[in-house]
Image (tube, rainbow, N blue to C red; front, side, top):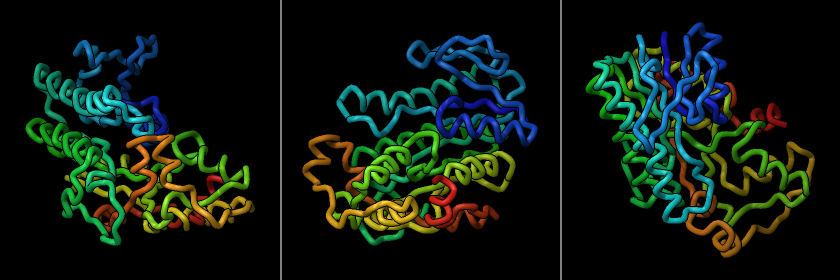
Length: 297
């Protein structure tokens, strides 16, 4: 299958490209820097430009592009968070229209914060809808709306509402491990907020399943089985690394002073259900934290 991928050089994208190639798919990568590589094609969202060759005989688009959510949310950066996800999807849709392309599938990343960023014991399914209509909920809603327009030109549209991705190579885990290595592991804020997470290998395999399983359509929570509280997560990580766990939590005001509004994704969290993706026959390799930490450490 001929697959075009945005964000193909990022943490998830680089691993996904390799896995898709192992499955004998032909992968093309959109890149913001001009390249001599045979499978890399230039695009510029601000200038509304994409190399036409990227769309030849295209079967599937995987849209992973998006600015890092973990930067401080200034007004300008919020605009970048929107543009990098939504404007880029709109540009892809416009180009497909110009080329009269019909896709077998359009697969987009989304965020588990689609439901809102808050703390509750409620277990959220794909049918729960937006519960707390805050900045990230609005961002994810527009992100998914930009993906849904592809239903006009694609047999399927899949959105993966992704939790915190655990990987040795980047993202949140190396930073968390550093605190543990320094013997300063502790809960954050109340410590009672839930932490949805997924091992990068499982996330990559979900994307491959979405490409290859024609029955997959719609929204799916991409989260592991075990959803611990923040305090439980850090305590298990410290134990797995044979390090100390401090019995007191980092105060809320410190997190807010350092990270501003972005601190909400650390200080708040509810639980998401993964039964829908498992109903498609997907089997998590790292369903529980202990097994994931053993692999990552």
